[in-house]
Image 1 (cartoon, rainbow, N blue to C red):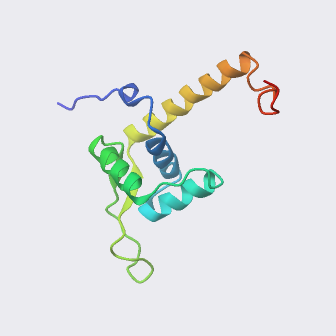
Image 2 (tube, rainbow, N blue to C red):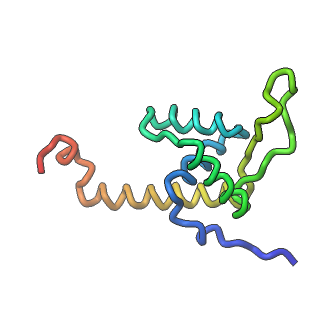
Length: 124
């Protein structure tokens, strides 16, 4: 009998885990590809170092939110040492719930007029 894991148990996600899972939503990536995607998608505001990246990947693998892909690109087109990662179904459910949770927080802040530009404009 397989035990069902409640995706809510993983929330809230730590920022590094959030960015890694989000980077894998579009498909498989190797570690350096994940680093590049995070940097590009955040306009260089988030830079995952190798220690943070691979430590977080290790935890995501253990939690079964991602898995190492069995399929490899042609060795002539890629470095054989690269490991590719992809989301599991559980990982996809977790990142979806986290995005919904964050959207709810933004809606709450918006309702309190925190997104009307007065803070960003320096009017404290």
